[in-house]
Amino acid sequence: MRILKTNNENPDKEVIEEAIRVMAHGGVVLYPTDTVYGLGVNIFNRKAVRSIYDIKKRSLMKPLSIIVSSKDAISHVANLRTRDIIYVDKFLPGPYTLILNKTKIVPRVVTSGLKHVGVRIPDNEIACRISDLFPVTTTSANLSDHEVCETPDEILDQLNHDVDLVIDVGKLKRNKPSTIINLTSEKPIILER
Image 1: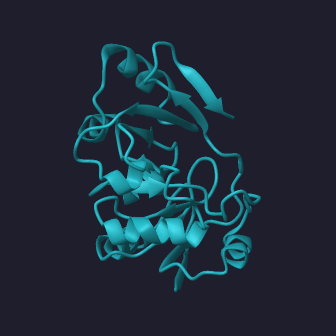
Image 2 (image 1 turned 90 degrees about the vertical axis):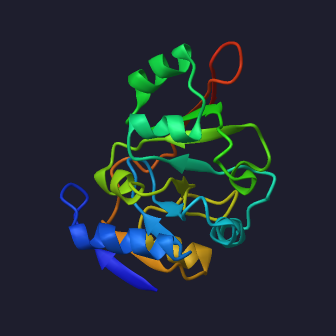
């Protein structure tokens, strides 16, 4: 495991490139978002996605959300309706996860076989830049049904598991998971805050 420290507001280019390289080769990266630290892998690497479930001790029946680097990239992973675009423009980037109807490109292992996917564009340069080449899983870096920790050291202690790379920017300002808004039903439904 490597730990690379950087600044959240002005991250080192080399740290971003290393995170992308690690995930491109099937590795797991602990990275900051605009909410909490997340566990990220390339969504197209099924073995890597399964490792996220193992690390978190998460049921395979609970889907993972993904991050993309920009609003334009959302159309690769989700079928956007006019109404969806209004919500994308209103809430992203930001501390929201929008549940959208997925495209066929999103692997079943990510969505637990469901027809929709949670999509985020965090208001965080590191999170967006590490998802430049491929969408990345985004799930809080904690054991399922356990407290979300604030620092990489606390997270690694709780997980009792080595990830391949840690991007350490220290304690995050918000430290609350994103608000989830389901846009697949007739009316938008707020699922979590």
